[in-house]
Length: 257
Ligand SMILES: O=P(O)(O)OC[C@@H](O)[C@@H](O)c1c[nH]c2ccccc12
Image (tube, rainbow, N blue to C red; front, side, top):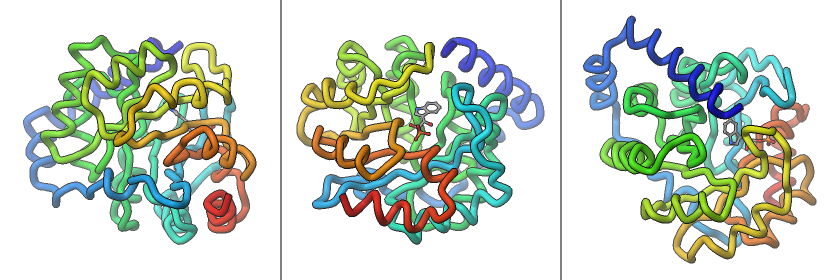
């Protein structure tokens, strides 16, 4: 259940806050070099853009890959032509960490997304302190005042929010924020079911000028082509890349549809 994932992420954040206070994380966030311009990096282009994800496991798919060197994997993604790197930082079910994100940030020159269950400001400061340029906000996990507060804080810290939706109502709630990037996740985070047609149904409701990102359910170039035809500017891919023997070739192939 999504609420369990959020509760777990908040518990883990509370434990970290014990070691490193909000004031300390805030100072570390402000001491970082400025975030990279993720909106420019992901702007619509002649070719589909790829956000390539560092993902060890997931509740729905179990263990995908060991990934002993997340920064090395991210460097391959960059070499293949990825426009940004997504790093799962959730530890319990996805096997990620903020250390992964920090290592990736130190290695690549493209924007890095903190992919987690963000539900309080502390986690946003942590993201910036680790070097994130982008932060995921899952509309289904947040009420509108909190969504608005976190979205504003991400912007104040110079980062960009990727606002993730899974229904027409959630797209409306996302648009309410004046977002630069809206994602449609084909996977329902409560049932874990995939609906590869969802992006095509919701994309027409996302106005021109906002970057449209299709998330999940890409296993082959045909899946990328399917999302591209439905209006995706960017496709976010995890499993297919971490399980592929040659991520450079995989991204090159995905970008050439
Ligand atoms: O591995 P896939 O099917 O390519 O999916 C990647 C990404 O979309 C998925 O990891 C994801 C999308 N939204 C999320 C929110 C939380 C955790 C994970 C996700």
